Structures are given as C-alpha cells and as structure tokens.
Image 1 (cartoon, rainbow, N blue to C red):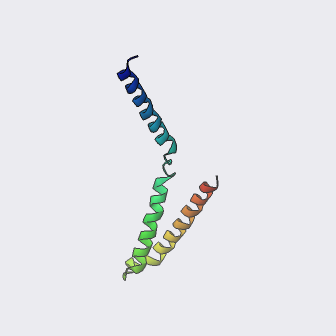
Image 2: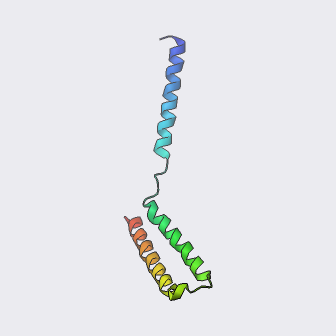
Length: 84
C-alpha cells in the first residue's frame, strides 16, 4: 500500500472511531417527551388561570382542581417510570 492510501485509510479509521465514540456517549433522548411537555403546559396554564381576574363563567375553580389532579397523576406516573 502506498503512503497516500495508508494515510487516507488511517484518517478514515480515526473518523470512524470518533463517530462511534460520539454515538456511544450521546445521551439518550428523554423518555415520554409529550408527557413532559404536557406537565409544563399544565403548570403554565395553572399559573395563567390563577392570575386571571376572570372566573371563566364560573368554571375557574373546577378547572384549577382538574389541572391540579392531572398534574398530580402525571407526576406520579413519571416517578413510577423513573424507579424502573
């Protein structure tokens, strides 16, 4: 093998090793991204609703209760998943 082909071969090997290392060390994507997004969205909606001067046609208290219940259940579900 001539010198040029040897150098090219070594360079390709180095690139392959670096690429494999990057793949192996990359963090896996978070599990259940939609549930995580829903928790954040519900928390933001709760803050917005609490701060609103309107009572939303008499539905504010029930809506806040439902949001609190949903947040509680989603957080419990995510805690269960983390334990596994």
